[in-house]
Length: 259
Image (tube, rainbow, N blue to C red):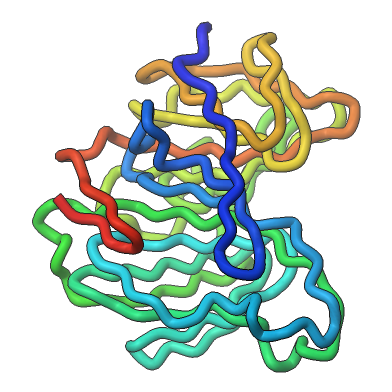
């Protein structure tokens, strides 16, 4: 199988810390409903770090944001009155709809501690008929996320259905989002779970159908394609995203997404 496109992350300064941005990309604006992909960290958060690293209140429209942590903790607050710590393994879905404001800050309880923040933030477009829906926030704890052993891999089904299990996280569009962990030399036969799919190695290079794929790069697969993923000597963690193609092109400007 050929890889349709490989996208390298670009470093973006969010005002105090950097992220690796993969989507949107000039040659690929979306994979399934996902129009935005940021790899956050791993970044050291030393004790007494100035509050300038906080992501201060900012607005969104027309999307759902998905925040998923591997390590660390982020305090989420929004204009609905939500105040909730985001912790590893949980899925946090904020639907902006016609408009919401939120912030992402260092929890006060950790102000005097050193720790590492590491995770992924995605934006998913909303269906054309739901772009102006009321805003909402849904937290799904790590304990509620379905997990399966598939071949050599441990797979957490964060959104959608795969390998006989379905995530409790509801999505408005056809969506696939998996957290895959492979042991050293481990193999996962990834079926065509969605019409559009992409694979992103988080922490180590892998082989995708015998082709090398570096960490921090995204491989977009051909439509409705399956793939064979194999880790190297250290094992690997990968994110798999996808879904049906978007129902129409989207325009993105700053934090706003709309037709």
